[in-house]
Length: 294
Image (cartoon, rainbow, N blue to C red; front, side, top):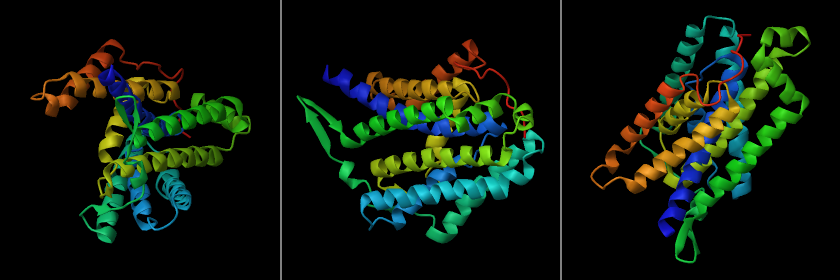
């Protein structure tokens, strides 16, 4: 029973992290058809921001980090993506790749290539003991915060005027603009929300690892991209389901594989992804219509 509970907590924690990142990616793809490969660098910016504000009280440090990442996301959209918004999808893809490598090398120039350590989030290192089960505080925090943010985003997208406009833009941006939806504002709001999700994920990853490097966000975002595709490109419910699904599969393989095969855990996870895409090539919960470029 202890093993089952611990595996479930690990699955929910890892899945919550993946779901937050997958939501940020799916949101932007749903609105403007962009697969933003520079999304991991928003996490990196958040990580370095946490390093710089590590001496501040935690609420202030978190607020400052969120503001920095949201500003970086808005700047990314305004400078890099808005000028090529009407270009061929290949141009958008190459632009996101170029921006990703540019930001990584800017980080190397400013902070160096070696990881920088920080004590932000060190208070979550301890475990909570329930009976004979020890549950990490950071895992509990990830589960709770992920549930709150996913619920809040569901309310925003489903019940607010801005959310209705975002859903309209995702289904048919040309028609949405004809009925008065302001393209620049909707895209900017989408990038701001994705930046907030990236900042949240960055904090929890820093709390788990205690260090930040130029490639800080590459690994988690790669898995989040996979979750976005498995869930159905542009589908927010699909991103959440696939994110938690990948977390569950990863945690289960970590537990059930023999010690000699644990280093190859990701190979088994990707085998499950491959089978899923063969069975459901359109994704678990495909978007109803294709995104229209703006």
